[in-house]
Image (tube, rainbow, N blue to C red; front, side, top):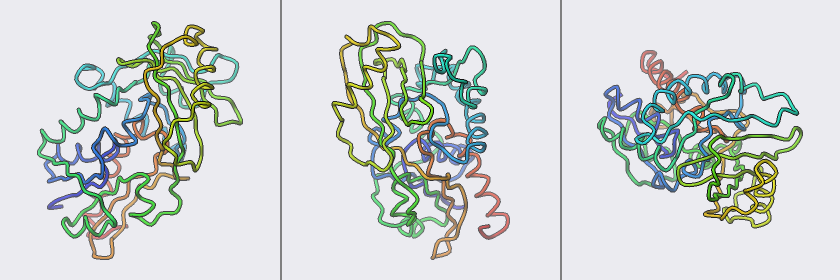
Length: 306
């Protein structure tokens, strides 16, 4: 691999690019948006494998990623990563299977994406990698300049990889002034897409959430925001009067199964696809990046894509 172009500047693309650059690979990240404009930037930052398949593989990726986040949490001001205690549900239903990853009492990585994404970009630059603003219409534009491409384009893969299985799952968050809550809370309602979560970040308390399958509208919905605050106030009544600081809407890049595999592009260039992580991009980012690089290495040794 003389040079690798990573397509996509969200958390999946940046993490993969960092690992490549830090082992001496010449890496460029091509992204239509700055990292602050990506779907990753809207993420609440709680590490839990939400809306991602295959489930067992996602738990493995999450477990491996947690180890990296635990190390990054030793420098929270620099990385934006903290290990924060929290509660899964109100005890009325069994905790989800992923809760076993974080032990009792639960302490899981909570990532401030406003700090973490610039940290990743800085780490990439320090290792010799580069980020470039490029809006692609096909992966061939990248393979015309590099013999190896890593496709981390998220929802963009619908067009770039001609993948009709990619679809958005709209999520809305309300950011309010924190009345003194220092632990996260998460509850799901069995049989529905409804979640209730509270995530304390340095700039405010994030309240959520929604999951509207197939909806791509980025306009905040006032009725959804009111419902979010109402559910969260049921957990902490003081939130009913908390001042709203911001409304956020993001589109989770969902696929029935994460695509992490190699192929040869029509011009013969090697491509590793690493996209379709749903609501768990941050959670599985390091584990998926390691596996993507393993696929690159295996293809390089074999001389062809599997």
